[in-house]
Image 1 (cartoon, rainbow, N blue to C red):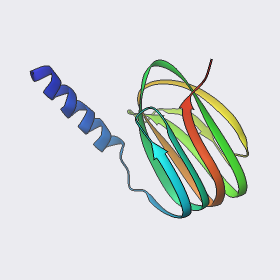
Image 2 (image 1 turned 180 degrees about the horizontal axis):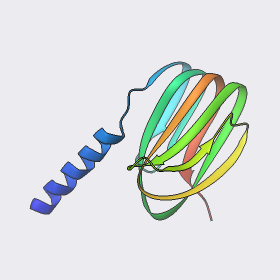
Image 3 (image 1 turned 180 degrees about the vertical axis):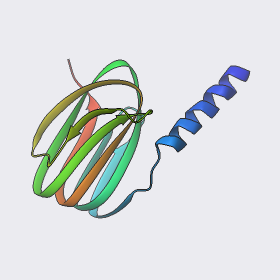
Image 4 (image 1 turned 60 degrees about the vertical axis):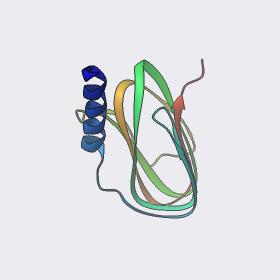
Length: 123
C-alpha cells in the first residue's frame, strides 16, 4: 500500500516539475495525447506548448513534422533538464531519439501551420 502511494506521489511531483508555463494561441487545432504519444494538427500555432510523456527503458521514438507555413522548433528534455534532441526550424520530415522515463516535449511555434506527432518508432 505504501509503495503505491509513494509511486503516485512521485509521478505527481515529476509532472509538477516538468510542467512549465505554456503560452500559445491555436486556431483549428486537434490534439491527442497520452503518456506514450502526442500529436497535434493545427491551422495556426503560435507560442510555446509542451507535453509530458513517460517512456519505458530504451524507447525508440519518432517525431514526425509537417510544415506548410511558419516555423517550429522542437526540444525534448529529461526530468533533470538534460536535452535529448533539439530540432530548430523543423521542416517536413521524421526525426528519431531514444529515451526512458519522464520526458518533456516543447514546441516553440511562429505562426506554424501543419502538424507534430511524437510516438513509438515502428520496427
